[in-house]
Length: 405
Image (cartoon, rainbow, N blue to C red):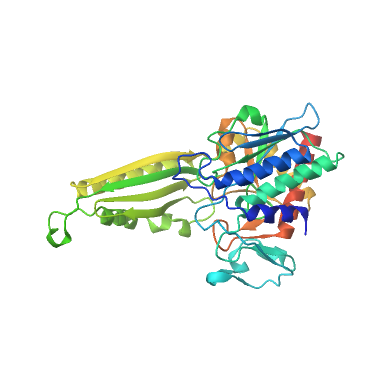
């Protein structure tokens, strides 16, 4: 078993599910367990300036050649709450024959439904047992960065600039860099290691906004409700039904954005609808917001006895405009992937990373792949060979920064 896989399996077995409804930082206490383990491992391998902040951001530094830009590496320790994250039991499918993988609870991982799985036929595929997610998003990135640090320390001949490492909590809750100390991090440029299929260097992310609806109604006994009741839950359902099907995640791809109704709850008295909006273009996001505002006005006038509230919150922005000012992050990552034997392309991520916000905080960020897919689901998987190749790409990219920056 490779060193990077061994690390990943240890980290994956720890519950680090974040909770966007929690006011604390980190949002869940379980994230501290992995953060403190990483803190001890970084100090034990000889990293300098190891520091775990009060809000769960962990920093460390590996000195390199002076006079070069300081290169940052970032990954997040939390996992998504969209699938269970406690009790993860990774399963290794050795010498995988290319056929669909059947897990518990009827979960099937079909290579026909993934972008890059067929690449690893004959290798080792890692999955959960089907009752939880796996946690490759982003414990694969954590393991890759940790193993790179170990290798760089043990082999001083490998070329590198100074490297600054940061592990963040609550990325999945949209709060990964709320307490990030850019000065302590000290990096001029950074890579988030939080992508999926190998060979794609992601220089764009969505612009992201959350949209929270609060509908208040009028509750009376249903037997005498005629002309009196205003059912908040029914209004919330009508709002969802009024959204454009072609603008939903399941009907969009590439550079298309979407409106995503994520959760609905309530009673006749009060109902809540949680949505997120995603678009690569600022003008596209503005259009989505105007469309929801028009819906709010329509339902408020249609149900004058109801309260129909809508609150937007900006989550992160597309870093493309920042990255286009200095293309080295992208070009050096493409060169590193080529040196590792891949034929890379520049692409976009249909999601976001901590780097989306860090880019606007003064640390331009590009997202690098980990080799996993089907994140946030019980069908999540990663290949041992993918982890190893992602690690090799990162080592080569770091080397490019040493020789060319």
